[in-house]
Amino acid sequence: MTYNPKLLDKAKRHPEKQKNPDRPAGRKPDWIRVKAPQGKGYLETKEIVKKQKLTTVCEEAGCPNIGECWQQKHATFMIMGEVCTRACAFCNVATGKPDELDKLEPLRVAVAVRQMGLKHVVVTSVDRDDLSDGGADHFVKTIQAIRMKSPGTTVEILPGDFRGNMEDWDTVIDARPDVYNHNMETVPRLYPTIRPGARYFRSLSGLKRVKERDPMQFTKSGLMVGLGETTEEVGQVMDDMRAADIDFITIGQYLQPTPKHAPVDRWVTPEEFEKLTRMAKNKGFLMVSASPLTRSSHHAGDDFAKLKAARQEKLTKLAAE
Ligand code: SF4
Image 1 (tube, protein in one colour):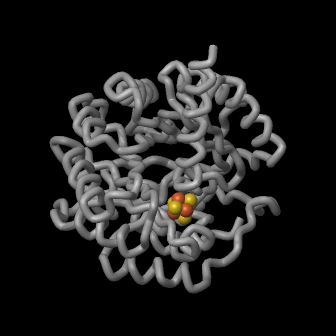
Image 2 (image 1 turned 45 degrees about the horizontal axis):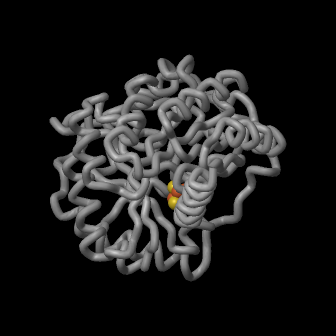
Image 3 (image 1 turned 120 degrees about the vertical axis):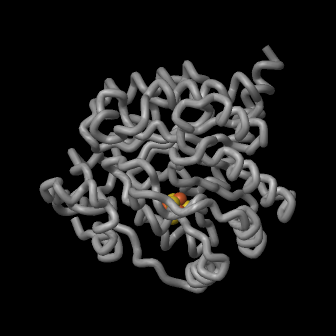
């Protein structure tokens, strides 16, 4: 597998991973190849992000879709800094002690959304376990600023688990984002090694809470595959997600950011992704996106329109019964 040189440079940002042996992933299969980022739209997006001094998960996570998304002026903003208080084994965001919150950041995100003319925006963040509210209030301010500057833009948020503090979940739910997205990331057996700072049922309870508090808010969650999970375990996670009334599941291939990160256990084939899509549809999700390059925020705007249409269709069918 060829690693992005920028990500390798940033390996020093993961002091906690330097003791890990190198476990390179081997050659990527043909179906994972993507084009190098280029084009007018890509450069304009890059310029707006730079000018507004914003951070994107597209760059920080080394997302393979950056060329395609930025060309269409779709970027996912990562708020509350570039440094995360957690050290997940799959993630390339730097671990350490974050800076103080930038109070003007919500406004700068809102200005960028307007300049980019986004109809739908995705906002994620680093985990801020150092803050008493985990950054819940900063999320609310960002949602409000976007709504003020671009009233027609729909807002999808992708926050962390707020250490399971339901008051913080409620604060964000009550700001009424259009989509509340929170990734389960992997199967419960792999949490201690892949997502050690998180708890499987804590994340699931938070997502369930969204629907209990605001049944019309769409909920979404994502999984990576190729980390060592079995298909049966993925099926169980789907069942748990449906029990929490999650509307939309995304599933994509795990890609190792540097050789110090968790190794790729296997490359899941496009045919297996089709099987996972059928499995998820049979379990009753309103929307399923499963492919090697699916990411939580990939095509989020188009998918939001489909999600709304799918709900409408379901409601119309129910009314006709
Ligand atoms: S898939 Fe999401 S994170 Fe990746 S480039 Fe597109 S918007 Fe950014």
